[in-house]
Length: 96
Image (cartoon, rainbow, N blue to C red; front, side, top):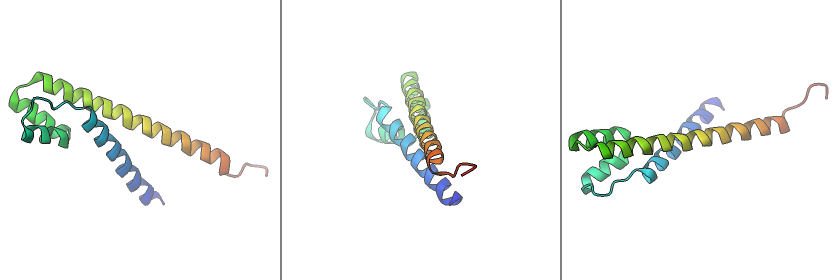
């Protein structure tokens, strides 16, 4: 169960992180190839910001990434809380 749970958890949290980043990053005003590179992830975004010399793009990339981390950590907290509640509900109690 551990390898399956770990792999599934990484996939789910990675998807949440990527989706939240893409939905929050602002690519208006960029040519289509640069916008596509920015949407792929943080590394491509920083490269585009440095190549264009755009501090505004770098700021929006950083803001979008921090927002995505906040969302992902919120999902982690929700999963942890749900797991704790399930453990309390279904694990046997001592003395029963």
